[in-house]
Figure 1 (cartoon, rainbow over the protein chains, first blue to last red):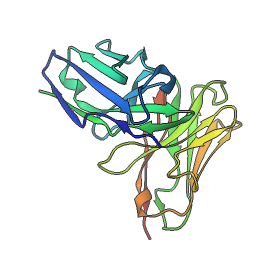
Figure 2 (spheres, each protein chain N blue to C red; figure 1 turned 90 degrees about the vertical axis):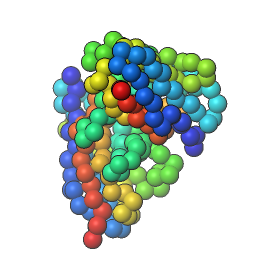
Figure 3 (cartoon, rainbow over the protein chains, first blue to last red; figure 1 turned 180 degrees about the vertical axis):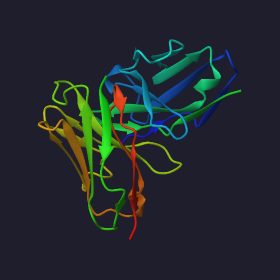
Length: 109
Length: 114
């Protein structure tokens, strides 16, 4: 089973830009891994921000975007807000099964 | 918008089978190209993917749990279910059902204890 890796923690200043990445021990991440990004705040269920690499929902703030970058999936936050402080998880699919990354704790400070 | 709600016992004895049901509202569970998943999260830890049910009827499971997991669907009730056998304390977690591309249930805590 592949291991999915994320930065354990990142800090961004209010109004700043930060990129979270999601890598795979099985090689480069592609669109065929259907990368998902989820946001989870303490005491809450996760919510889906990005699906299939870069698709957003109506509830996804425009400041979040998903992409592939340097062989990894990436979630970029442009113009960070205090309410963006949360844990972020990526999920990659491997022939129908899936694996979560360990999560990135994002601090807005 | 689709909503999901988990239900089931909050306490399970060691060696027994954990059984949870997810009720889907606001949309049909039987739409081609969708899949429905179970995910869990031990207290203070990250998310662990348990498995998926595709509307074709096929399933995919986490290899580390595959020998103990069954996910099934009841389209007449718009529900899908999780069974995890031979549970131990390590299976204590908040269990979520989800359509990963969209929507999550609020989660239900299952404690394995005698």
